[in-house]
Image 1 (tube, rainbow, N blue to C red):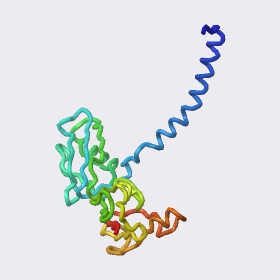
Image 2 (tube, rainbow, N blue to C red):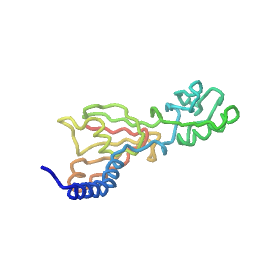
Image 3 (cartoon, rainbow, N blue to C red):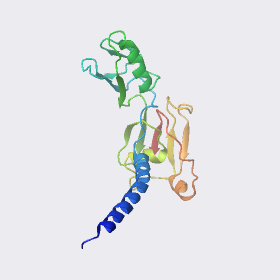
Image 4 (spheres, rainbow, N blue to C red):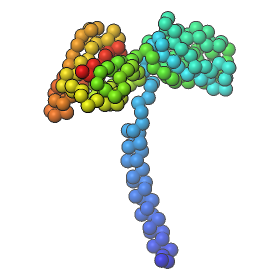
Length: 201
């Protein structure tokens, strides 16, 4: 079908308006699906971080945070890393390298979380140890473990407080999965703390 130049131009303008109006919505939806960044993650002993110094491959390394909370890097030497965020560590490393390099560009990325973990045991598809790189609830922890097995007692899920959490170590609380799904009760979809153990009987 042949369209007049006027109609072709009109269709083009309408298409452009529809697309440009939809773009913010698409961008917002895409942003909401992005995983949470690790900038606010507090580093601890056992974590593995990527230290990247732009243009300096000899200095850039993947390093392990030692039990004393420090890392070692060429030129920078010993740097305290535990208890701060990756961005703060990047600033520390930058300060150390400024004595040897002009305007060092340092980026620190959490490569592997080993200092903050929780455990899930019992009637789930994949019991074991899981890292905490962002806030995780009981329901999310169960989902990460592959969900319930057929004979799981969903009304009597135990959460045993670990040494790294806010609750007293060894304190046991309960979560009723079925009741929570029904009316939002059942112990609450609480956040899992480092060191917690979830037991699915």
